Amino acid sequence: MAHITSIGAGMFSGLAVAAPALDLTAAQLADLDTYSEFSALFASQIASQGGTPATGAFLDIANVREFPPLGTPPNVVNVPNYGSATSQQIQGQADPSSMELTVNYIPSDWASGTNLGSKLGNGKVQVFRFSLLNAEPTGSGPTKLASAVAGLGTIENSQWFFLGKLEALQVNPQLTDANQATITVTLQSRFFGAFTSPNA
Image 1 (cartoon, rainbow, N blue to C red):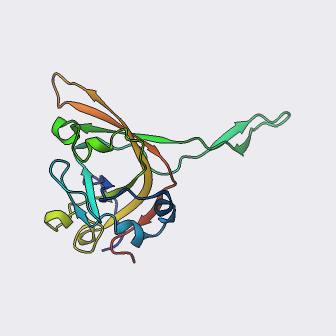
Image 2: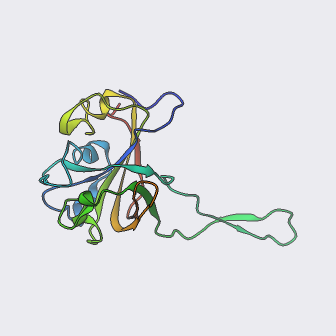
Image 3: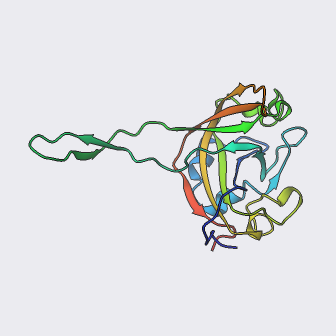
């Protein structure tokens, strides 16, 4: 397929995190910058409970209620300019950024010892993929959400990749709605993309 070509709601969008058998080294993470390198890490989905990390395995962060804005925010500072009716804009200092997403909380998905639970607060840099989807992929099985022709390539899609750390999960119990949790991810790289699957 190709990038999304029409106006629509990204209601099938998703966030995934790579789950290789062995953590990528700092050198391997630094070398990641092309679609083929990133997509190889997102070839087969595994479950948070009972799934076995392996080469090309990834975990889907499901039940997301709300995504934050994605991308690099403007880093501009307005500076008063004496004698001028307008301020001058200069490039500000880049601060480490973070993102927070709200999920409907299912404790068993994030429990200690599960694949997702073990990534929380472990201080290790992970590879993430955000997929902007206006329709549900038509594939099936562990490759339905894969960055491949038989996965996301079955529909129009746009994908961004970035490095980050799963820092924290804060539970927000609800008495009249689904229990929620806020997941904090600190960004460790710029966003790579937008790419589409397959890469055109």
